[in-house]
Amino acid sequence: MRKFILIILCAATLLSSFSCVVIDVDETTKSQPGSVNTSGKETSADPIGTGVETIPDITEAPGTTPPVTEPVTEAKTEADTEPKTTEPPVTEAPETMFKTDLSAFEKYMDPADPSEYLILVNPANPMTDHSYKPKDLTKLVKVREGRSSKYMREYAAKAFEAMMKEADANGCKDLSVTSAFRSYSDQESLFQYYVDKFMAKGMSKEEAIAATRVDTAYPGESEHQTGLAVDVHNLSAADQKFADKYEGKWLAENCWKFGFILRYPLGKEDITGYVFEPWHFRFVGRTHAKRIYDLGITLEEYLEKYYKD
Ligand SMILES: [Zn+2]
Image (cartoon, rainbow, N blue to C red; front, side):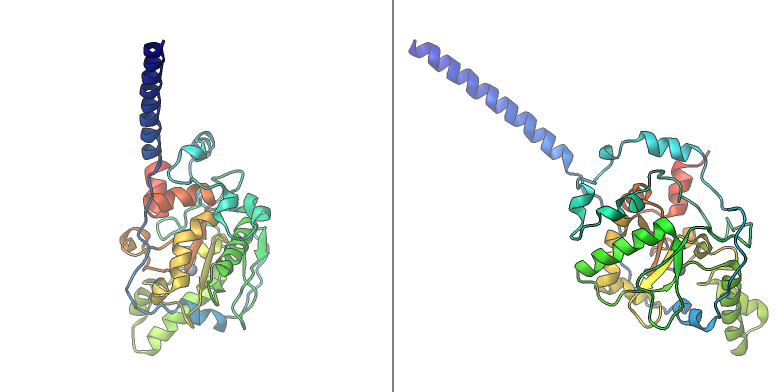
């Protein structure tokens, strides 16, 4: 009888040690932290934030049809069929990602159609309809004092509001919006403002245009016209130094949770066509924002890699 009990005990010990091994293997395969390089040290000043308020607000006629380059239809099916739980490394449920209660904003941060906001506008893909103006423009919170009201498309505006609530709760100070939706004519005025400034310094028109193009989008080539981009920082003018501030780092690391990406990262200037802009955030929705963040790539690379025919 004793022998029999001993055998059972041994068997039980063996079994439990086996199951322990199995559990350990599972645990190790689960932890796959993602990483992204977002901080920069370049300090060349960018004038975008300073010129905007000198331009009069222009009321355009209501937009017609959206002319924006849409990703191929596969985008939707792929995003829909791929369950989010298999993606690395969102281990948190939305409600545990935030210190504040953002449940009312969840549907905006993570839109039901994940690819609706995956639009590409850049010098190679300009807006063809100059009169394009989104129909769902919504007023933004936290607009810099003394500036006119700023707008983004509804989902982007609500997601931005959520991001600002959470930024406040995490100790970010004095963040405010310096620019958001800009119509074609706004962009035209902004561009001309800098061209004139350079010409006043003695440059020829061609030289002034080239100098302006370095960090200001040519009319029709600015994604600010999509109503999905926002410039937010806490410096007197937009500057790459924002990347070294707590607020700049917090936004760069956390913006994906609200559906935003840092659109013009450091070291990707050749791909985006723009200098590093740690203050410029673009709404794409959480599904894509998270993938882009995890991969550490730009929107151009992401669309090229996953959504090209
Ligand atoms: Zn911008």
